Image (cartoon, rainbow, N blue to C red; front, side, top):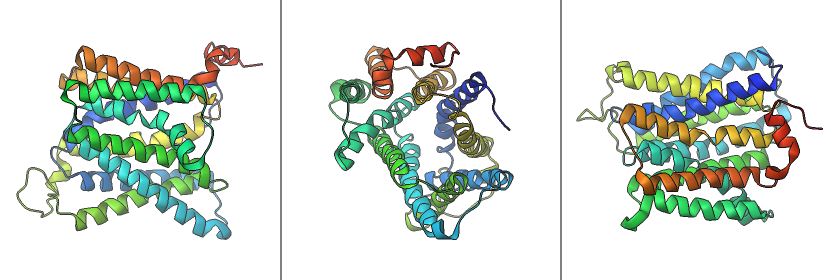
Length: 317
């Protein structure tokens, strides 16, 4: 499917942000019934298989001289995704959906900070302002007067770092690699790492069982089945296609603005379906995290007239 207008690209990417935010609720409900590693193994196995038709449709060519680098990059980046999704999914057992959504969003301002610390890339004023807002927002959202993270918030914070490193290293090390093939390998790698962890780490396959024996009825549970299908097909395979197809038609700042709505959708979904509320202090913290995401990504573009022209549907000069 080809895209011809920036308006259609905007709508499709907005749907991705909605799916990513809303699926937090499904994951939260599913991990009550099934283990984290089994859920992630099935989710990413399905996602990798769902991308195969796109590989054949695009007729992507893989040169033999990059094959080794392709698998090394795929399994290395896949390991970061495995750590991130394990920490996020497991963390949701112990924290709220709203907290998980907003803390995961911290991966956005963390990217330029890690680029400065690891690769000594210069960071502009807006990045450091975003860090200040994110730190204060994280404190208000998770700590407040308790003076400690709970276990779930800590795990999701690890997830934010893993996702930030994944974005950073993807930008650094995958130039000239076939994108669809790389994505399929990464998602397959997450499934493989999750299966290995499931075998090595003592963990009940079903949270409602008393033994580690596998029962196919676990996968037929409506919540678990819908969680795997939505996150695998829509949250991973469809989301990948949307990003690759739509970002060529939209400015990076506008894409960042769209994806900044993900934690908002996570909170709204948790409020509608789970009855979660943040309270005044939590809401202020969530707002500061949103400000941090926008400031760190948009930064100097806030005064760039071309950005505002593009938001009105005009092409920049």
